Image (cartoon, rainbow over all chains, first blue to last red; front, side, top):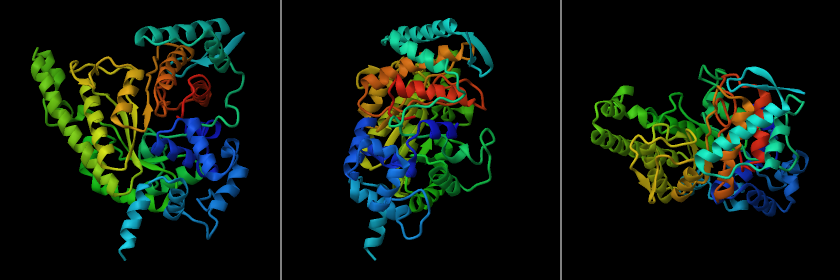
Length: 105
Length: 351
């Protein structure tokens, strides 16, 4: 069932802005349209662009917040989440723990 | 005109448009009467009929209306469980597949025996997988588990006498007391798991099939959510077990409201009060009814949640739930029709 949901109804995760809108729902308890507006606002784009892979590929690269393709040198994993945390103000648990573990070195 | 559709068990059948309209109406009215909620309007029912009767195998929706996908069952949809794909992957690889192959918006870890009691025993082992995953993933990763108060009873290998067996012996007071004691164990285990996952960097927890063992289970999970959201940064998603909470205790209340007999709207209101971020109503499919009947009923229940709740609503859509037929190999025609109905008519925030 995963594939039909993903292709027909899902936002597309890292291909677009799905992970970001998901975080807005989790962190801000925002309903869908409010979550989309919040994310689009922080990225400086229109809501309509959020689900456009072509537009979002450049937006994500510009902000270096994780791409679906594995280009070397671009932020991945915890580094991308740290950048997402700073851009959107989400207090991402794993990022905060990473900071706590590394700041005392 | 004959329309290709399915029974509640997934078998292909044909129905006329009039039969589909009638079954949708019956399903809608069943939900509305039982839960005392507004039925879908005639326009909404006609829209639903168009979705069910669409000529294509797969239906989708307009660009721009995409919703967030969250999930339950963890990575076991891909690996490790015989009723799913069973591909031999590590859980970390499965998370990467969800994030980078599938393009999911969120993912979830969880153990094969997806219940709280066994999960608590291996929480530290699960925590290291969560730490691994959190270093390499970008999308939110939750930790999923079913509260399942039932496994705390002796009938399922637990410590406490079964309340059903006590009730059969007319020991109603003892049956209630044992549920309260088992519930305290559930709450304690839930807090332990939450603290462990919090320290592992989890983004949140997903409680799946909540209230499967009735009102006492729901009560203790609600109390656990209050404590978890007060003490940790974890975000909580709650998926329910069914459209009505069964009253095995029947007197327990939450914020002054009796939990037994709560329908999806009231369930969601309780979850919202407790502090969760996302609510997932579940509506079980009746295998003796048609797919149009089940989807009419399911959308009516879910719409009562989206109309009344402030937090996002992500209905459970899967095998035997949400209107989808009860079969382990779910046909894509009914999957996509159910999702389209939820997005366009119930206006859900996710699936």
